[in-house]
Image 1 (cartoon, helix red, strand yellow):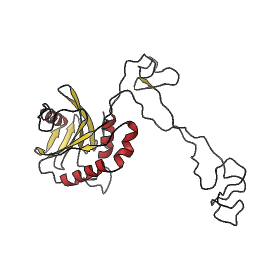
Image 2 (cartoon, rainbow, N blue to C red):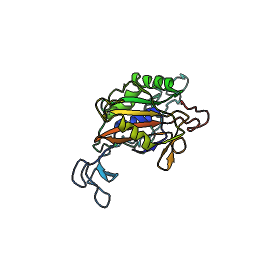
Image 3 (spheres, rainbow, N blue to C red):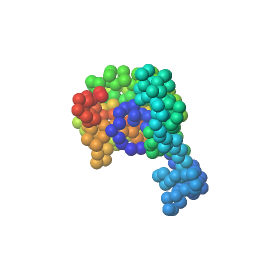
Image 4 (cartoon, helix red, strand yellow):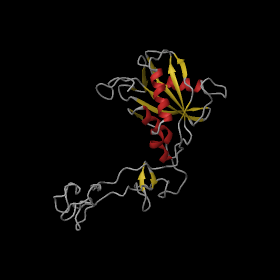
Length: 263
């Protein structure tokens, strides 16, 4: 799971899709390891050292004209040859007037399923620091994300279910000038390590969202939020349970001029 400068909704989508891995299939076969020369059986592609079946999107090589006698205005001008509602003439390889024909293009990239877990019933637990001035705005955004059509439109085709917004944890951590990712992981483990834990028990279907206020800078190894990325997602083990979490930093102007920290 890599760090990225995506927005919140994009980061959440990346988390719930999960990461893949081999399921024990034979070398060179689907979901198995690639052959030593980075090849697979016919019809499979070697991606990240695993053989996967990549279906292209029906890349188009179609071309053609509007047809002899056709009008480039879709037939709307009755004074042009080939006029009428259809626009195109009787001959030629082009489509009828007004119909969109895609230009030739290379195959679009595909998402390869390597057998990893997908969050079919994701839940989101926001974690706010003490005196965060943006808490109300962030909660408003999250509520709209969970209730609106955007989430379903962008995640349902991958098997991800509706997003459930859990009650936020407010004032869970005191603001400090700089904290590390390790501090967040330690706090997550401490507060989810039992059935009656303050943030709820460790659950692989619950994504914990750390919302950093503008007064807090965060480091991850040798990198820093708002310098190298605007936010990231990762996971940590709590009593053997892989718990996903998201870090969202307040980075005004990070994505370009006139972007405020809420953007």
